[in-house]
Length: 334
Ligand code: PEP
Ligand code: MN
Image (cartoon, rainbow, N blue to C red):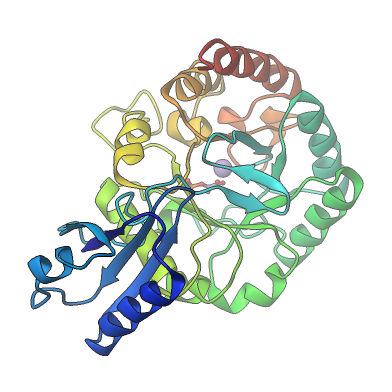
């Protein structure tokens, strides 16, 4: 249930109302917007008398929300969230591009790519140190050393870094990581999500291979329920009957999520298509659809990449893609 307060309500009156709900064992989420304050009630609101609340002089409107996701809900928080990733903002009109190799392979590799993608307009550096691979015989990532190399690239470029966590026990290694990625395969690893809810770090939450948008929002809700509301959602393609592409990019996720949630939405065309030459048109389409950002894999030598070479752009291809993406954003400016 959401309660929209009238403009100019005194803090004391607001606090009194909140206390009254808390006495009824309800959680209260306060969204203090520029023009409106909205109280979101969490818990069993079945016995709450909406007519009684609507009759209070400080209340403008009361609405019941049947969606199971509350904190992630746009109606709980009517202003789009801006997530601050160590100074780089995503959401609420701020657009950011995350780029870098699928896996960190060496210090030279990741530092070199970081400088190139930054020059083309990327503002966050990605690189996997812990890799979720289908085969246990494939390269599993450089682990702690990979994070050290990312930190070195951050030192050299100033770019905040994004890297994937697979196990909550590894959290101490992520202390200086700016954005923690939860990969598609862990979207419903609820124990991991709960642990991340106890941190304050921005979380890039990728949609599972076979998950609905509601399930994606419920996973975000797990992290938010723990107290961490810094979430960026990522659509990275879902599994369908199509086999020419690695996955099927669900671009309608952008405008659909825009209706449902205040959280920013980033598109990853690399994992969605699995084919480098499809990345540019899909990145352009994502920008046109209103995505808050992109995540793109870039490798200095794609044929020799230890992971996901077929979908990786060269730095030159990435540069051309960025020019088109920024041109689309410019053309669609209000
Ligand atoms: C990745 O970003 O490198 C990755 C493994 O992505 P996903 O979890 O979407 O497959
Ligand atoms: Mn990858």
